[in-house]
Structure formats: structure tokens, C-alpha cells
Image 1 (cartoon, rainbow, N blue to C red):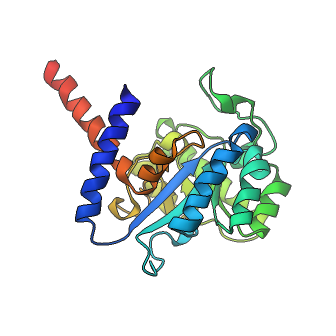
Image 2 (spheres, rainbow, N blue to C red):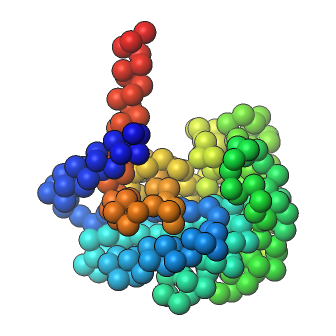
Length: 263
């Protein structure tokens, strides 16, 4: 029922956006792992981006010229799982699409060291090795930080927050040989302390998992992203790429208000 409500709300919101939009949407989407059995659906999604959208590098999403396009999209992958290298990268290369990989730098070549639900399919994944990250960087994919050990950053003391961000940045810069510009916050959790630390240690961008377009992001360290999956229907995927699933944010706010009112 929740999915149906969100889908119908997004369809209505999309109609509103198309009527009121005066400038192109800048959207960042994010995946996690990509299973072999999902490759066909993933390629269909990527073909849509290649033919209907202007797909740009993550680092350029805020300022790149629109060139007349109505939608600018950046593709990202959190957790840097090997399945992305094996399954997503060949499709992206074939279609000439750029993408950014967010790497938990203290977990290279190993299964995830962080907590996941028991039924999470990503529990059986493995994080990319140093060699695979180097290969992706040399192949034109952007490498970013996803912290050192994938903790809930807001639960850490300030010194540990800074250490997670600094050590991840340094480790990845040693691997790729150049500056690491951005970080995505593990679990999407952040606060002012986390964002200020990211800025202080030298990142230029911080990415959340809050569903809103780039131009609606409060600043460079709260850039919104839309969660997508190869298992999304094409209608659902198109609505997310259009920014219409921003309506989920308002649905959550309404739900919280109703709960408070009932109390």
C-alpha cells in the first residue's frame, strides 16, 4: 500500500512539476549492489538515461551547462561493491555514461563490516579491492569517500568523525593519486557537526539520501539523492529521475504531523 500511495503521489507531483518547471532538473540517483539477474533491467534504465537525459559527472552536477536538456542526471553507487564493477560498469561503458563510486576505504576487498538487516541481499557482497578502484579511476569513473568504516556518523564523538573522514580521504587519494572531492554519509545520516567536519577536512561536496533535486539542496554538503533499483518499474524509475519522488519527503512530513496530532 505504501508503494502504491508513493507512486500515485509521484505521478500527480510530476504533472505539477511539468507545469511549474522553469529550469532544468538536476538529479542525483544512487544504487548499491547490482545482481547478475538484474542486469537486463539495469541496462534498460541506463539506456533511458543515455537517450532521454543529459547524464553528467557527479562533480559537475551543480554547475554544468544544461545544453538545452530538461533533465541532468548523475549516477552514483554507494558501498563500492564488486558486483558494480562486474555488472554495472560494462553497461555504463557501452553506453558512455559517467558514474561516481562511494568507497568505504577501510573495508577494501572484504565483506561489509557494518550492520545490515538479516534479510539484506547485500550482506553477501564484497567491497572492491584497491586494484579495482584504481582501474575504475583510470577508466574515467569518479571515486569518492563513503567514510572509513561505514559508521552512523552522528553517533560518534567529534574526533572520531574527523578521523573517519580524514583517513578515508587520505587512503583513497593514495590509491588514485589525486584529490577526493566528495563524501556520501553512511546510512544517509548527518548533522551540522558531520557536515562541518567534511568541509573542514577538505571535501567539496557531501551527499545525503534525502529525496530532493540538487537545486533544492540547502548547500554543497546536503546534496539530495534519489534511491533507485533495477527492480523499479520503468514508470517508477522515470518518476524518480524526473524528481517527482521528492513528494515522498512531504508524505513523510504529513505522516509525522498526523502522529503528533493523534497524541
